[in-house]
Length: 193
Image 1 (spheres, rainbow, N blue to C red):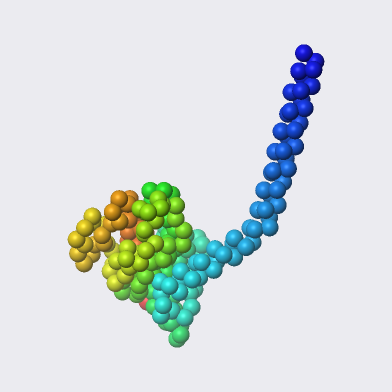
Image 2: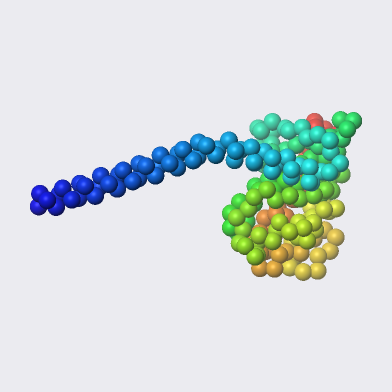
């Protein structure tokens, strides 16, 4: 019995050492990469802003509390070279089929979508992941609030991705929220006249 206890203790100690070394390595990798990951996220967001609002020279962020009060992760007032507001760029997170879909939506001062960019998603490859393709997300450009249909989209509609209606609706919900935010913010006359 005494020998059996020594073996159990020995195996437990080996397992503890392996776990401790693994945890230390993971902590070190996280420490080394956390800044680079944050930098890449900022670069991706800046690229998305320029993609969805090509006529803007600068993007002035609203404070985080204001953005959250409107239901967005971030809101930027897009401005032209003269400093005149040309619209909003809204960063949204909406749950799709596979998880959160993070997107940036550009909306001009008239409430028309100027572009949609997907920053990240966890949708099913080959189905919901098609939402990053231009033939799907491009359907939103030039429209205001939209609804999703399976086929035969009219003026205020977009065609869903076949087999990924939930993902399609999630992105449409983000777009509709961004258009609604523009109307609300414009109505308040604070950031956009």
